[in-house]
Length: 201
Ligand code: IMP
Ligand code: MG
Image (cartoon, rainbow, N blue to C red; front, side, top):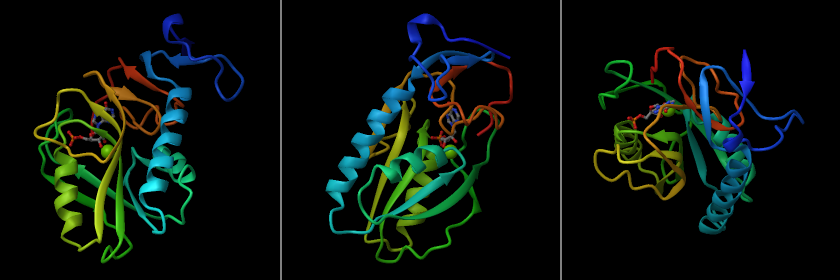
């Protein structure tokens, strides 16, 4: 079931050529498809300049980062390489405890590499804190983080992001890789989720 997006947040035509509609369990669009495309191009240009002459290794945190990472990589005009990691955090459904378990580890050796961790959203920042410590111990030449979204005012300490897409209000969001109970990852925009699926992450 879909319904038209509220007029104030309509972003024009979807890439399919159809007007933007949001699913029934979603509310307003917080970041439009156009805003995403523009910001991803800017981040790509910034990374291209910062890493000139180098071969950065993009480390995507599955599953949420896969859409962002795919677009970001194509906005970087350098010979990038890819690896992926999957983590799951212990704790209840809606709050990260900060105790993270690696579900899928990297395939590549980080020794001497210029690593850019690509994350979907920084909420408490605890997942990122764990990842940073874990990856830094593998002796990379450099380790920076590129996060698409940061939820305003929720972080325990400074997440220290070199590259950041957008700050969003404290609402649960889906789309552009982010899910609610595995749903809505393929929405081309970021919108507020108002359904009652378990908000697990
Ligand atoms: P943190 O450890 O509290 O920073 O949690 C970060 C992780 O929780 C992200 O990588 C996401 O997988 C998930 N997450 C946090 N907020 C949202 C949201 O609004 N939508 C979907 N996933 C989220
Ligand atoms: Mg994630």
